[in-house]
Length: 331
Image (cartoon, rainbow, N blue to C red; front, side, top):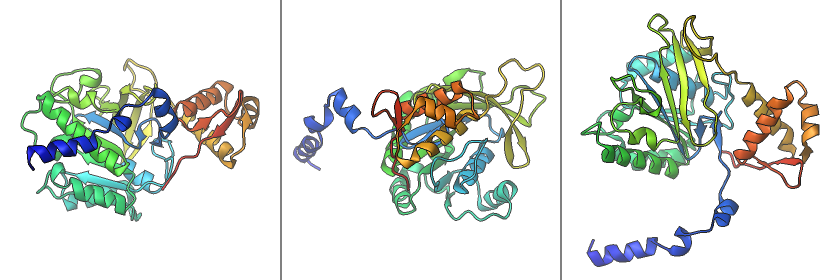
């Protein structure tokens, strides 16, 4: 492509009326956030889970994908819509995937969970066919396991290279309209928060949600700690303790002697689901009516559920004191 053609193409793309808008135009035209699972997976958002090798990230990924594709709750949280998942596994051969699936889900068939595990190619080489298959199969959950293996990374500590990788993941996420979950290994040093992952800081900085999983102590390898140091979509930052039993993951209390809060239960997600089910008929409800109908929950939990759903763009207030569901297009 000549310089003149390249410049003409840029001019066709760079349209001021599309690139520069008022905040009111953005608010008017923007679709609501579309959560797929709790406060952790959203369409067009990238979630990073960081953990030590061998802690169970891949098992967690397959367990999550399997449950959601079966329309079952995972960690007590229901999927928000019908889930079709594509798992890009850059580390596991067929026998290991089959063994892991048998261990986690038994004999159940999951025709809407698709697997890629051909290690001859990196993510950038299969990007187009990945986007095509996501559209063809109506994929709304994309899992990349793991970031190091997915890219031909020359230097883990190169921020510019890491930024390019994360930007590429976001481009695929936007093109596929998926919630994207990407796994990453922890660093050798015991770093806290979003600096926990190996290599360049840009990987965590450019993710929308960062989740760290680790062992709370050396004596309890069956218990993992789930911490959320960053969530730019909502302000929820739970600290959970999860016990691995066979191929399942369930909440548990922290081991004795471990400093930290006990697990946050999933009541808030149940409240949100009850609110959306109530408002699904298109009618408007006053707050006091919602509290009365959902009297099995504490008023503060109902108020928290209403507030979160409003911030997520799932509720409208057509007039003061009234709530109405905002319709979200599902598959």
